[in-house]
Amino acid sequence: MRFVLGALCGLLSGLALYAQDPQFTKDNRLLKPENYREWIYLSSGLGMTYGPARESGGENPPFENVFVTPTAYKSFLETGKWPNGTTFILEIRASASQGSINKGGHFQQDRLRYEVEVKDETRFPDKWAFFGFGENDASSQPIPKSAGCQACHSKNGAVDNTFVQFYPTLLPIAKSKGTLKAAKE
Image (cartoon, rainbow, N blue to C red; front, side):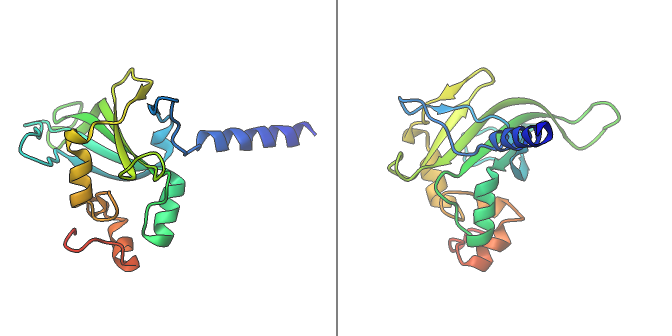
């Protein structure tokens, strides 16, 4: 009996670890997603810029790592679309080019911040919202539309509101499912 209870507790804690639905406060603030590094890793960019105002980081540009919830990923593999409740993390880390035995190339260092994109068709008029988190933030309010995230993603996202064109494992799926916006490769 103890073994069965222990196994059940282990299973339930494993499910809690992968709880994927975004959690909000009563005043519409997103609670910091935990354990996102155990979600599905999609890709990394180095020094990517999305407009003239954004700095690329010069000699040591930042890394941007993208993670998505496992259930959203599985749904995308089947349908080529992102389901309601999809949550993305864009983790921004400092980079360095000289350290230990590395004398060229770049490697990742401390996390600078991370941004979250959530699809919630009932909560947000545009279906998607963006949130920014510093290291010590427990929650975040939606980034204002005037910041440009929503406009850029809705205009340039390859699938729905997302930059699938930068995710080499998902781009072929979007093509095969016919969900890729024209000229977004």
